Amino acid sequence: SFALMCLEEYFSRNKDGSVLILVPSVALLDQWYVDIITDTSLKAEEISVFGGGNKNSGKRKVNISTLNTARKISREILSENDLLIVDECHKAASKENSKAILSSKSYHSLGLSATPERQYDEGFEQILIPRLGPIIIDYSYSKAKKDGVICDFELHNVRVRLTDEEQEKYEILTKKIAAVLQN
Image 1 (cartoon, one colour):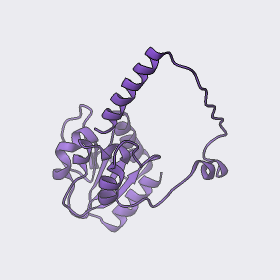
Image 2 (image 1 turned 30 degrees about the vertical axis):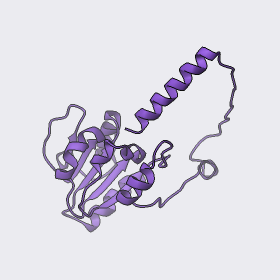
Image 3 (image 1 turned 90 degrees about the vertical axis):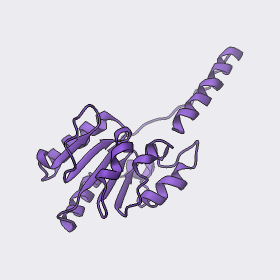
Image 4 (image 1 turned 45 degrees about the vertical axis):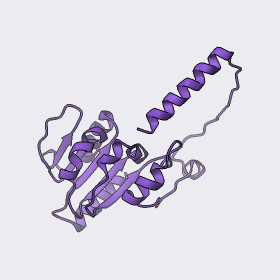
């Protein structure tokens, strides 16, 4: 993947460097670990995993953490000139999750997201761009389809009428979802 190529390029230029990879879920934590072991020359003993019930084994060459855990440990793990990779980076722009990337240290960064802009707040502009930088690659659905990266699909919008009670419940849930997304 692009991120693994960036990781390898970083290490080719920074032999003693370290990488911190932040992910929003335990499933992605496991996936990153497997992908690094499988698709790079790095070995298991060079990787630390934080979060998801893993015991803290200290900083290593590659450090993978859930955003939730990284809120507390990223300042200790991330050093000057390290590489910070944030998968699904739009989730790191909430008030609480941004604690994982708000470091005063100077580091290299890569944010990964299919949808980096946030609908309910200014986290993209106020948090992601200052900490991770601007968008460097914008790969549209039409380009991905043309390149054969995604298969054909059809999208159908279906309108339904809600009862007054359903509409009220819908509006309450929409507000609750918006509040959760801001965190």
